[in-house]
Amino acid sequence: MDQPQGQRSGLGINAVLFFGFGIAAGVLIAFSGAGFLQDSAALIATVFLSALMVILLLGVILFAARRMIWSRLFGFAEVQIEQLANPLASVAERAIAGDPAGATMAARDLVALALARYSWVTTRRWIIASLTALIAAMAALAGTALLFQQNQLIEKQSGLLTEQNARIAEQTILLSQQTALSIQQVQLAEADRNAQLAVEITEIAAALGVVLDRVAVEFEAATGTPPDLLFNAIQTQDLGRELVLRITSVSRATKPYRFLDLGVRAEGLKDRTRIAFQRRRAELPNTYARIGAYYGWIDPPAEAQLIDRPASPERGQLLSVLLGAGLFNLEALNTAGLNLSFAHLPNANLFLITAQAGILDNADFTGSNLVEADLGGSSLENARCRGCVIRKSSFAEVTADRLRPPHVAMMAPMSTRANGIDFAGAAIFETSFARAQMLAANFDGALLVQTDFTGTILGAATFRKALILAPIWGGTNLKSADFDGAILFGADPLAGLAAGAAPGTFDATRFRVDPVTRDDVLGMSIVNEHLSPDQIDLVTGSAPAYRLIRIQPFDDGVPPP
Image 1 (spheres, rainbow, N blue to C red):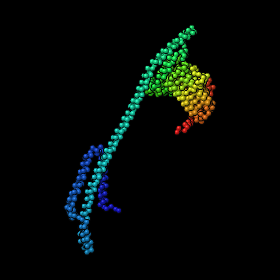
Image 2: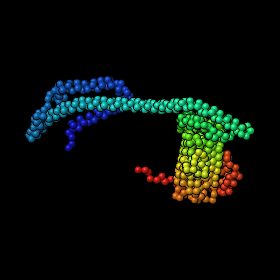
Image 3: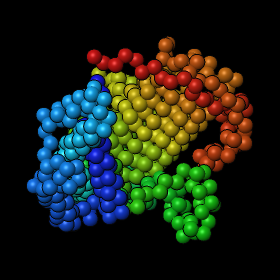
Image 4: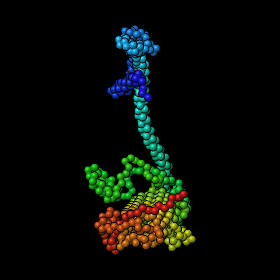
């Protein structure tokens, strides 16, 4: 149904007023900003209220003077609906009577009455619409101002929350640093406690010196010749029970802890060269990078930090004292309870040492030399032998024919437990790991020459980028062992691995082989340090070299329930 003309006019007025106030508010906000609305809220309210009062006053005046206005404009002081009937009837009567002049006068009266009536209704609607529009516009503008203010507060709150989050992050960092400092303090306190035990180790060294002097005197009395050098002269029976108990009790009293990393790696010559080259690093960055990549240099952390895992320099010192006194056979002390786990003794010379059934878990011999050492039957889990040079030594299971006193035949065989042992970057020659348990062992980047892995458990071990010459495989458990990047010699190294592995433990389809030139092999830093071309030919029989590339992932199996 169509709306009446008056109602449409009122709606049009409302629309125009709303549109005008919207334009004004938008321009005001766009050019002045919401801050202006907030700062000038009293002025804006005064303007709106003034306009409201003006329109209201105008309405009151029009209402009070309507009769005078109508009389002057239309000749009528008041118009009601009933008054329209008489002029309308007169128009009809005059028209019927054939009086055009009378009909015209009656029609004029009718139009005047109608215009008077319409003007009053329209004026009233305009006043009401104006008041309504002003009130609505004021409410809308107030709502807009409140919305902008709310947005400003939200924005400010967001900034405060961002700042708060930044402060929380800083607080977290400070707490982490405080925690790290607390841990350092605890570890350094433990170091201080262990340092007090170092005095006892010094006294043990003095007591061993007394024993060594006594042995020298006895040797001279027996042979008539003073000894120039006593090598492996002290046996455990020479120590006496009191000294044996002191040695074993100190080894157990000292505890592992984390101490500050001084930033000097234990790999020996390589790291000393890196430190020497630091002086020219800024001037020769490309040369430094090239040599660093060749030798595998690793920059230490910029700030002093604790070492990555606990260690015991005191136990390392105790072992050094025993070896320095010429006590190389540790089996009796191991039986008495010698504990060298976590011993920290990098860059040591462990020549001819025997420690069957020793406790060497987590020991760190990084960069050391082991020559004709026998650590078979020992517990070496997670021990570190990174960068070691190992020759003609044994980590193999100890059979009855290899037992050293005081071990007896009924104790054989004694298995070597070396799960997680780390030989990364080591050079290992003619060494046996036969039947040792070496799950997840690390031989990455190592040089292995005529190593014996007969019956060795090497599940999940890694030989990444290792150089393997003339290995001895025989029933070796190679389940999930990774040879990615390893170089082996022979007409078909994959077939050799498959033939030497325990049945079902090596999947040759997981790898492919790429030929490697002789120059590639000779260009390896570990080869230049430990092998000559003639030695390589002698060991391999001039067989071709191949690099294994893993092309398939490992089957991780079904996850546990």
